[in-house]
Length: 212
Image (cartoon, rainbow, N blue to C red; front, top):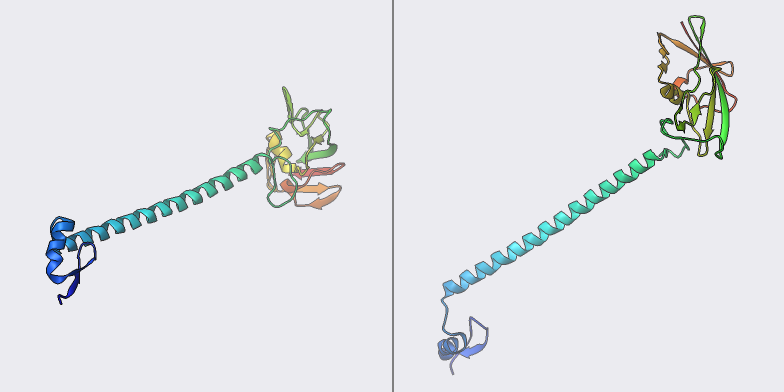
């Protein structure tokens, strides 16, 4: 009995003497072993290229997701900053109150802080209409040159003395006061303090600043 062999093309079991006939009749002629090996290597390369393409696409999708996430977080941060939201959880007004406009008739608080400034023994005037310009009144403002700071705001309030000086456009910290350079002494309700620019502005507060 003739020994059975597998067709190198389709894997069918064929008697040894009929292999060549099977190849010619079914597969249109036999291919050499070299041709079969070349086809195998070509198939392997094609599969490798497909795997690499899929891997590249996955990496690109991952980078796109990370970039999108960063952009979303940045956009949320900018939105919170624009609305004056304090990430520490402490309610606050806008870092710079100048862009905000309020009306006397608006709901919310209306507080008053008295500010006295003395430089080299001479009282310094706090001008009228700080924070007031045509068509807009800042939450921090003055109406008269009497040293009274008005605070009018409908949102959470956490304004500071430093914000008022920024709105005024004058220098103020522990070593400068208006045009004077040198150590600055500060008192709140008659008691010495060194909070300076971070001093919260609350209703009825009496603030004294002296230099020289």
